[in-house]
Length: 127
Image 1 (cartoon, helix red, strand yellow):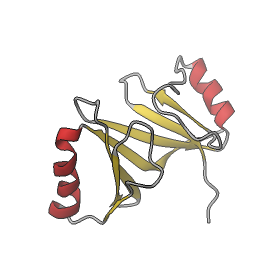
Image 2 (tube, one colour):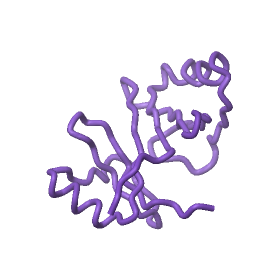
Image 3 (tube, helix red, strand yellow):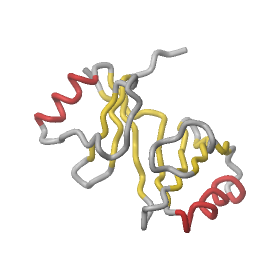
């Protein structure tokens, strides 16, 4: 079983800073951005914009009940159950109450000791 950083980074942003944050990445930095609002987005998220962030995808998610921004990261693994056992042995427990995941997704939410949320997800097959 192995872990590796994955391509998705989510920035959870309060409504009051959402438009300015999107404008920063899209207009000031000139990074390609796609508004995915209206498609399936995470529960609790009002609007979402995907930004090409080098080899990564930065998701700018508007979360109305947030008072400050938060960054969430994704880890991929080749064996989710073994990964969760290894994390449990280190005192890291699932935090699946943070945001619902599709039933078909082999993944769990966790938080590192500093409280940064990570999605531990089954590695995707290369296309």
